[in-house]
Image (tube, rainbow, N blue to C red; front, side):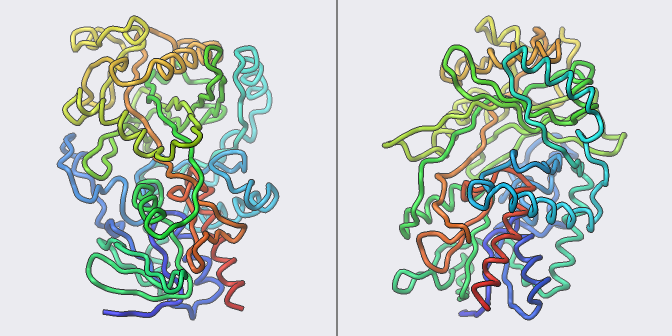
Length: 466
């Protein structure tokens, strides 16, 4: 069946949601279509939350569906342009700041917590910064609005209902198989159900889980790209007491380190106070580690988890950052029967495998119950192992106890960023009629900048229709 729309949005993550929201706010007469390979938000249920065992849902309800991975993430909104992507490089610092404020206002409108971490603890943050400087760490100050896993789900549920009431047509459980071209111009898409949609404007907003799909489309139709960054590392878990100062004053301490041995950039990412370590499953059953935290006291744990990510930028002829990250994760999966590997920091430093017996001695109990004790040195290149160890030792100077022998390291955490799509200020790709936004295009790296990106591209579309 051949159909006609004004705007087609591929993907229903934060970028696509906020693009649709802005379009309907300004032009409710437009026919806006969202095509999403996952489920509607009310149908997104992960059996593992009850059974503690993954049953291999396809597509995975944690990473796909309305709101993307953000629906079940910890829901942290980074309110600084310095965090979460490349929008300042494309739009400028001031414009990005304005867009972040506008997207934040929308989250508030739909029920986000009004509390912001990192705004009223000047003396405490000053002391944390002093310790960071002494350890050669850079503290990136970024106010954080914490939605919480269960509250984020409710907010996105309201957004889905609002968009549907405004007339946005949503097609779930539907995969775009082809971007259609006529004389080098993108004119529509074809789905796995055989439907063809034509539109003047097409927006790829597929998110991080769809980065691999979009990379293939870039190759198929000749979209210009540049090599992207590879972020790979571990998720660290410690007792809340170790992270208490950082948690209470910053909620998420964003710290950057350039390691003494290799001068590699390493950063902390996605801190979850009183949270749980979790598994994410990607296409093909690839298991990678993540974390989340709930707002409700009944679901809180005694542990804090956060990621340590090593950023690698490659030059030609390298052009496959997703495959590189996947290969490392596949090694871990191979050793653990498709599960997540866990190792104590003491064993990590000694180069020996953690065993069930040694793990049971710990005061610190893993919150990811099906993690498999193992040896990360059989997974990571030596350089990344050294980077992770040096980062943990540096962090220990800011919040003593992180370098404890009992600290747990889960692997592998990897962020699948595709090659960066070359876009202009209006997020137009080298293929006329096709715009690319969000994490899947290598433009953003988080909920808030992706949301702001959606508003920006919607305005560019509206301007072109004047």
